[in-house]
Image 1 (tube, rainbow, N blue to C red):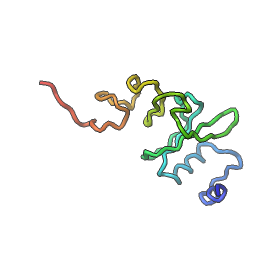
Image 2 (cartoon, helix red, strand yellow):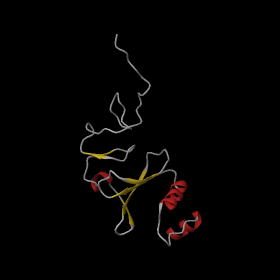
Image 3 (cartoon, rainbow, N blue to C red):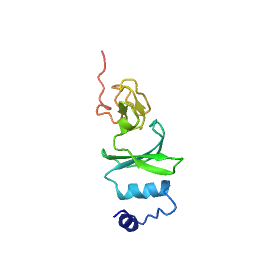
Image 4 (tube, one colour):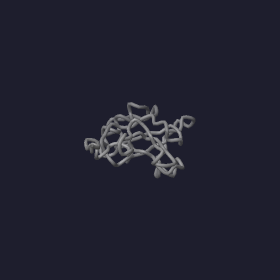
Length: 122
């Protein structure tokens, strides 16, 4: 089944998979955002598909093995309580998380539903 899918979308994995192959997979499976992490710290992603989808396909790439592993439960795999979907960083508490994707007003991780709403004090 996998070989048939690879042949249909024109991907040859005989020499392994690199970023171009990940891009091709992302183009074919746009209903999922593919994110590939280097290591279980979850702070270093090597690939994040440029699609707007809430459904994710998280993958761990182990450089020593040169192998990809599917991550069924990202927070359990990285032993953290929170993994933020916009920046792919992990954190022990959602209150202490800060990155360039965090809303400066409500401290929510992007996208903020209230980004254009301002209440001015008089």
